[in-house]
Length: 609
Image 1 (cartoon, rainbow, N blue to C red):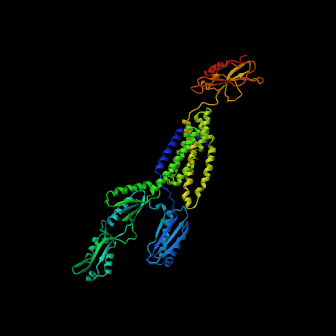
Image 2: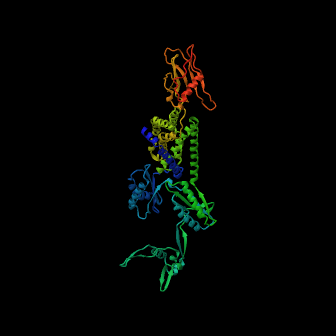
Image 3: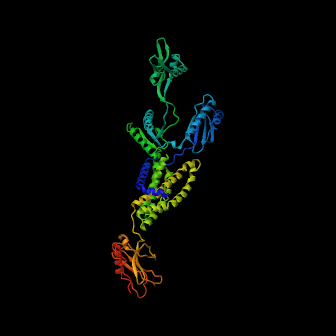
């Protein structure tokens, strides 16, 4: 770990660039990450539906359900199978293990259903296989209503549906209240009797003339020409001009024996808004799409198209889930910001402004790095992720506080900033790693929580793990390197003290590296000590070297501490042998000034008798 920290300090510019890049990419990821209220959790259910007109529930169980059960029960990962038979219908609900591969399971079910379809009775409709996915439920409903013909509403709804499905975040648009269009042929019985026609003839005639016939190609020797036979009814004129009967030179057409009009199939349900007939468009978003951006795009396209519609057509938005998502995310984001501010206030109040700001940088750094990691994994920003961020906001600064506090202590002892922060990061690296590892060990088992609840809650341990790992890098790499650059050297509380040593009769003045309260002293030449160090000395005292010397008296010298206190102060620190007197304070002061001016101080005044 020491080599990594030393390498980071030796490449401080690269480290700071990496910090800036992480925060910049994290901010971009926070803007681009899909936002939603609940996580996209795949529900492990697949639904198989089989229709057979007129079959009884008992026969549906025997003829429809049992052949399907024999094929489907051997599916891999199948946890439960439940089947229901009803009048004209049979359904099978398949439950798989949580965390299953939805695409693979859906394809396997379809293959098994196709295999079992050969055992179903003739006349059974094509079985439908559908995945039950909560994430595919509609995120917004658009109602078109007003006192206009039904055909107008349906036409406008289909045009809007085509435009909305072209949006990148929209998966599909279902139109509620839409009916399949058809041509209705109304035949008068008396007219048919006049021309000697029957209903079977008319029905057979329409069926034979509404077939797609592949005609192939004609080989001319120099190339091939495709041949098409217009055999499909495309509009009402094709039916009106269709020959029904030919008698001599007279041709009887459908227009002679029947009335033809465009209409819709009988409705299976009704949609009304404020008492007016309506058509409802239910918009579903794609998996992983940003629900807020998707609904904004849907509203923009709808407003753009509605400006060209008749004024009597009303557009009403219903069940807009983006409003709920905005409210939940806004509340949780406000809680995150408020929690960060409270933590910053506590840190600044206890550590000071500059150390508090250094520690506070670890919070947005870890947050943005964690969101960048979540975005890279393909996850979304939801209530579980934001709740996890609130929970770990106080844990992100623990390591940074320890490192910064130790570095500040080294600064007060006179070490340069770079050395102080490098020492603090190296000294506290393993304790911080151990502390973070114990927290990670608590959340790690939550990754293996089984079931749908585990799939829903897995965002909690993932968010905690990535943010705490990012806070570890902040505490040991980025914050120490940044602190070594922005911090300033401080005046040491433990300075080079000037010491007056010798016997009561013969004494010399010298300088020694001593701490406050030290009792040992040595005599050296003051000229070898820089003037800046001498000017900050805290003690100038006389100490007898003879072990038999009686108690002595010393003078403690304190330099000016601020601008108001311009004079130095000398105070007695002990007692002096009886009959002897210390040099005057002025002589002691002159001795310190001589040391400060890098002059030899071996000629300092000796004790006076």
